[in-house]
Length: 568
Ligand code: DON
Image (cartoon, rainbow, N blue to C red):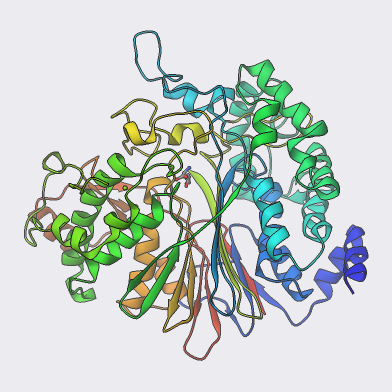
């Protein structure tokens, strides 16, 4: 059987014939519908329709949720180059059908030659230009090792069957939508500027709707990964290309860095909210801690949709205290003793929130990190549930759109600019405006603090929701809102995803709201409590799945992007 599957996928035409011939499947592009796509058995929700289709096909072939996740990750590396990646990293949270939970940390690491002050000039001034762009901005990529480890532990289909769909998409190309064509055209200048050899397939022209994006070098890299697994990326031809790119551009990643990189299975961070169990990502992400802190405080308060400004006030006051904690205490726990347990205990959260005033905003200047006892924009998320009930929640990133904007010549993939997630100087904000200090300073081989929060919820011991989003520092608060909308405000999954989002993070001291939000009455009530409000572009792209009471799966695919659900 496995042989048959393998051979069926070794031919690209057969792969697509197989896809098209599945008449019983359903898929759709998201619009602002109230009800998301429903599936009886399985569901994939990702940032790109082609990637969601690949995931669905893998599930139809009998692959499990982790098989589908690997194939979706690889497909996104081709069709969603702004965030899908081989040159980045991420986190995967897994819940098996009988409730065992796992989390995989394939976050990038600082190169061995990295040092605390590497982004300061001679006068000690921070230089975000080099922590955000070009060769010095990249951490050692973790995605390929992560996918290999996920497959070793959970894969049921052959590795090659999971990589082949991405190879087909890279080699044969895919037609660009208007949004994609405009996006690539707008980034082509920067790719040319920061890469040492002009990646002409991106930069040689202005893209138009319907143009085909063919990525031959990327296809070749994917073939090496297919045929040699981890070694296909961290050694041999691809590693040589990567290190040569670094040398040409003054970057730090060496052969030794690549050889040493390991993704890590970590115990997921878990907590409870009412009847729900939350399974999320612990350090080096602070996202899961923030989510549990917010839900922990919420549990001691009553909220209602009718008093929405009171809810937003409460949420903002939580956020400003919790993001102060983030700046002080959250980091890679392999390097810094992050007080995770303390930060999420009810006792700590009650004390932390003691000076909450339901009628008045507390200025962020009056907020410092909590006292602890001595003893701590572009990413992409996808959610998958398979026909057995296994679930995967996975968030992966290059950090900013197109990462460092360095395309590795000869290997065809873009490198991350994840080093900017370190605190490059205490008190200097990163590209998402969040602050950090000693805990999150740059150190060789350390993982930079993340906000990514792939999360799975159980209700009374059964799978309830799979959820996550991109959005930098707004990630945990968007996941929080997606959960609260369903649990407290009785929304379905798509409805919850559609809702306007709000975000606050201690500093800067304001509430961000999405362009288009126009409820003047609510905004007036918030201003009366002393809050400043600022309009911004959309917040996050939540892709989620809800298990409804009758057992059907409802997708929530974010209309803010071209996110799409595919299920059956
Ligand atoms: O790990 C983090 O928190 C960031 N590198 C995520 C970046 C991100 O979400 C950008 N997307 N909009």
